[in-house]
Length: 139
Image 1: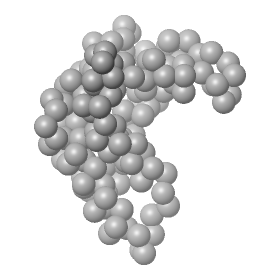
Image 2: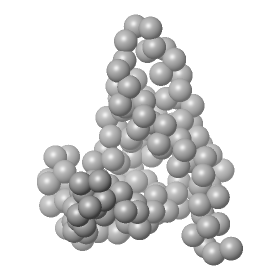
Image 3: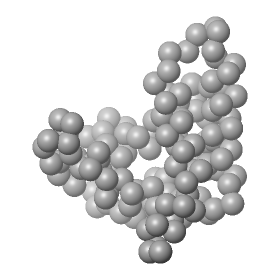
C-alpha cells in the first residue's frame, strides 16, 4: 500500500468531517434545524481538531489531495482544465468557508481558529504569491 493510500485511510474521518461541514454550510438554517446543525457542526469540528492525527499533517494531505483532484483542477463539469492558480483560488475559498465562515455562523469561530491556522500554514507552504491568490479568492 502506497503513502497516498495509507493517508487516505488515515485521514478518512477528517475528510468526511470536512465534507460534512461543507454540506452544513450549504444547508438552509431555520428554527427547526438550527440546534441539530449546530450539534453536527460541533462534532465535525471536534473530529477535525481533536482527532488522533496531527492537524498539520492533515492540512498538508488535504491540499495535496485537492491538487491531485479533477474537481479542483477543472471547470464546467470537468470539461475544461483550470490553471494551478485557479485551483489554488478554489482551495483557498474552501479553506475559508470550512475553517472560518461556516463555524462562525454557528458560534464556533474561536474553536475553529486552530484548524484555520493549520490550513493556511499548509496553504502558504504549497503556493507562491499567496496574497494574490487570496485577493483573487475574495478573502
